[in-house]
Amino acid sequence: MTALNDLVRPDRYPRSSRYDPAWLVGLDMGPNPLWLLEDLARDLDLRPGMKVLDLGSGKGATSVFLAREYGVEVVAADWWIAAEEAAAVFAAAGVADRVTAVRTEAHVLPFEPESFDAVVSIDAFEYFGTADGYLPYLARFLRPGGQLGVATPGMTREVRDIGFVPAHVKRVVGWEAIAWHTPEWWRFQWEITELVDVTSARLQEDAWRDWLLWARVCAEVQPDGLKANQPVIDMLTEDGGEYLSFALVTARKK
Image 1 (cartoon, rainbow, N blue to C red):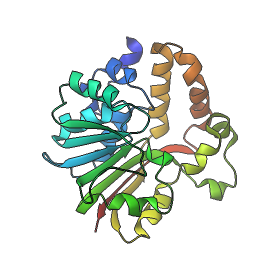
Image 2: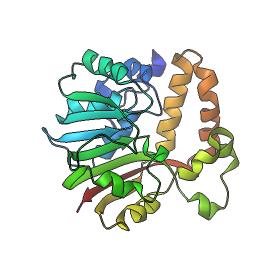
Image 3: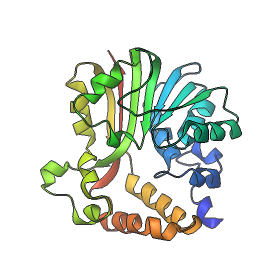
Image 4: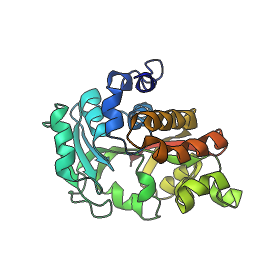
């Protein structure tokens, strides 16, 4: 129980700290998604009644959070998790009337143009959103003035500028680190399209420490958790914040 209590941090994440950490760890698909979303949402203007696409919603923790904390109507879209599995999470959390689960791949979204007031993506955009043509595709689903918010693994320096993937990172994630960009990279990538105005682009403060804490808790409390999380723990410990972080980026459609 001590390990799970480490995930309750009302000083920094007051909204997230209201959620049962055992529930959250049970939905684990990456480092604490509610911390990432709560931090990202400070740069967004989410209001009750808005329609929000949670893109890459995983097992549903972020969609529950969006519905409860901001009073928005959520479409939870994910490719890896069956809609029925996610819908069961939403029903158990009491938000089934405000969250709809859809299983879809990010490049073939089954929505009408200008369907959403906001699109949010937590720890998923790195898998599908780095291609030059992806933002123009995604922007068509936002209403004019609609918001986009992404929290994605990031680097303090571009791999291209370093000239290599740092060895301790390469051992764990290999080539995936090529898609872990700096906030400045994201700002340019989005603004060059002239489709959006980037409203913020920053590294999450002490992101590597948050990530490390999550990995240590999961290693202690999950079945086979040590085997799954020890490589990540070693990577983050060796890195010490030199290269690894999370990029938090927000924008408005023109």
